[in-house]
Image 1 (cartoon, rainbow, N blue to C red):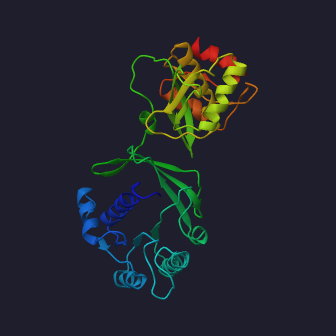
Image 2: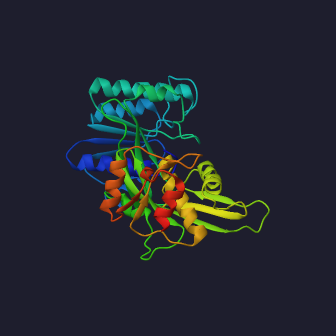
Image 3: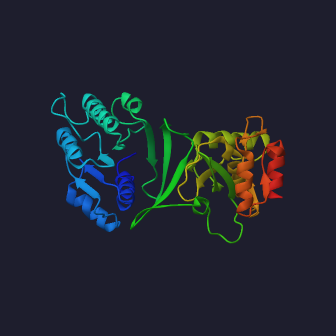
Length: 344
């Protein structure tokens, strides 16, 4: 995950829970001193007599600590900051990362002990360091989230022991990190009465269906080039939807500023949110609120046709569970029909 997203906090919690169950855990921090890690552990109530902390950047010392303690789990934070004197180059260099990871993986297999390696990612989201690192390990998990919000997701990118479509949802608090069992409540506003420019949709993250609220604001532009501002949704898809709304639904937007956002900092990139975005924009233009009982999902084509999306039954069930019983989806056929159904 990205720096500062909470990887160390999450793994310290994992290490603490295993230690409190009676297992020996070695947490090796190459980025912080042992006293810094201890302070965080005290703040999050993660201290345990079976949790051993070490601050080492040399692979030889890390291996020595492992041989001396023989833990049931070892966490190395992070693999990019540990180096070996037997390998040329500074810590973080591809040769160092590959060599350190290979040695630790060999150690894990020889002792049948799980080892968790913490790694940073580049700007495009891929693991920093050599690509071979992903092939060496058994499981790759991505910890992500906007640092401006407390919500965090763990996504499995590779898993030799199980499926890769599981998603974990957590919340960062002052006392550490806690599981969010029903995250749908975080992605909708607390408005008690319907407001124009909002529409509920159902996104699928892994195997989990999540209720999310799309908000749109449309105002007359004061500049020759109208603004198109998005947050949490794909800006290119919003631009396409604006063109479809103008051409297929007769809603003129060429002289208006359009703002589209999700609630709670959620990011939705799947086309299933197309219909909810279009309804929210149409609602903002007409100043007609969408009923609280309405939820919409479906992909919109350039012809204005509403196409079906994956897991429709799961999406409908989640919407119904939270009181949104009026489902607007691909059964409407055309965008105009769906807008009429949603806005009345």
